[in-house]
Every structure is written in C-alpha cells, then in structure tokens.
Amino acid sequence: MSFIRNIEHEKVLKLADEITVQPGQIVSKTLAQNDAVSVTLFAFSKGEEIGTHDSTGDAFVHVLEGTGRYTVGGREHIVRAGEALVMPAKVPHAVYAVEDFKWILTVVFPAD
Image (cartoon, rainbow, N blue to C red; front, side, top):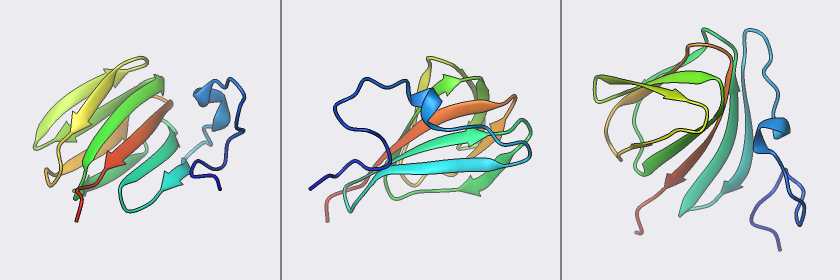
C-alpha cells in the first residue's frame, strides 16, 4: 500500500520537475491526502492567485522555484525559492504569483 502517490518511489527526484507551469493557470498535483495530512505540489503562472480562505490545519509552504506572495491574517509575506512559511490553522490567507512559481503545500490537520 502506498500513501504517497503521483511520483516515483525509491528514486531521487527534483520536486520542481514533477509539475509544469501552464500560462494563465494554476496546476496542482496531490501527493498525499488523508485525515491527518495533505501534500500538494503547485505551479502558478505569473499573476494567478487563490483568494482569501482558511484551513482547519496548519499549512506549511516551501517555494521550489520563483516567488510567491502569501497574505496571512492581512500581512503580506514574499517567499522565494528555498524559503518556507507556516500559515496557522484558521487564519485567513491568500496566495499570489509575483512571477511563475512552484511550491509544495503540506497541511497538518488536528487529531479528532
């Protein structure tokens, strides 16, 4: 049984190569999803965005390529390749592509 899907197992990978930016689009690839955790790769074309929303879990973002702007609780954070940010549970947040960028999102949900 595999819990991580949509990428090869037992192979060294460059995560940024596992997803492609498409002009005018947001592309996502789910790597894991269950009641405890969600792991998703994203590729945003410059100017694309996800509007303000919140989550019941803590969201950890790690930018793989490019630059994104994350607005968390009304405060803007510019996050570049190699940098990470935690967006706390239940705090409104949004994402905007300052330029084409790729990132991985890990959300850890509370235990019931």
